[in-house]
Length: 125
Ligand SMILES: [Zn+2]
Image (cartoon, rainbow, N blue to C red):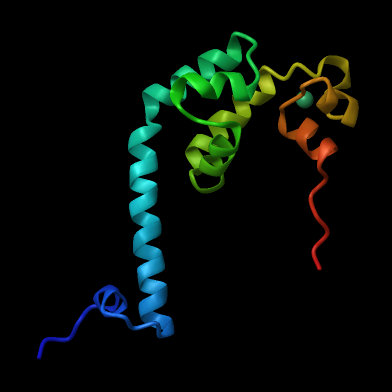
């Protein structure tokens, strides 16, 4: 009998660590492929154009069928997108003279410095 691949063993009910990890990796890859096709370069440019017009991230994300959380989620695993997004958020931050402070964040500041001031990174435990 031919040796089954780890993902096939998972599909056939095996929940041992290796098949489980292989299934998890392959379904993550599948989900990201779909995400990449739904939010490709054209949609990303539209998002950035909206931000440059002065829209908030939530407002700019809506016409391209995204939410602010989905945009940040994409930025967590897509480094290229993250770099371009952070550059645009930085250049369009409405925090003004309060940029980088909690007040800037409360006034809609959306750059990394404003977000960090509003939600400091958690202490490692
Ligand atoms: Zn800012």
